[in-house]
Image 1 (cartoon, helix red, strand yellow):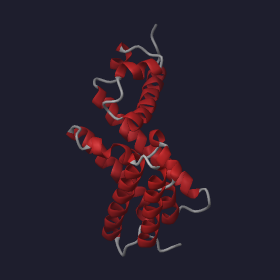
Image 2: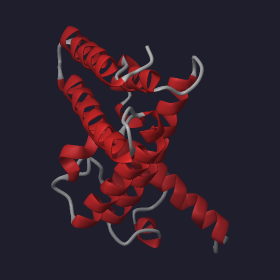
Image 3: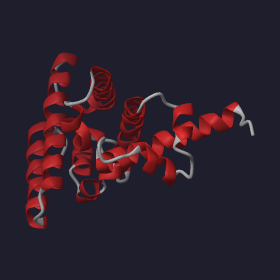
Image 4: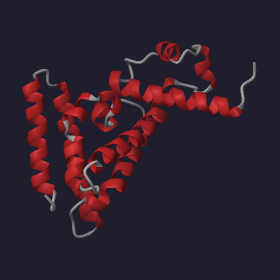
Length: 194
């Protein structure tokens, strides 16, 4: 049976979306093509109609996850009103975001792993950081764009590190303390509005 181009495109998009969540949850090595395809109720061989390698899927899934996570952070931050840096920090370093690895920020979930991937994957990661920066740069303090970029890089890498460390902590009180300490510090340091 031949499928339409739309069907093929929808199947590919579904594969990328499911892989995006699974890679964030389980990492590159924790996801097998066979298990992924079985979850999608597709054949293992069908994978190769859409992707030539697992790395190609990983790269597309990383791009997808950046867009999804960025949207979710902004939506959470805007629940109480306008998007502000204070609300972004609060949403990013929340218990909910910490618990939701599969739906959360791929930078916090995958950055250590991406460092050991190919140049192509690392390039996609760079592009992902640029997308985050573009969205949140208008919220950053600084006299000019260069200062705002520097502020963003310090804040975002610090928040991703704090979130990653909190996720690794087995003690719930320690986890909460990491999130609260980082949140309080970054709000105090970077937010002009309170």
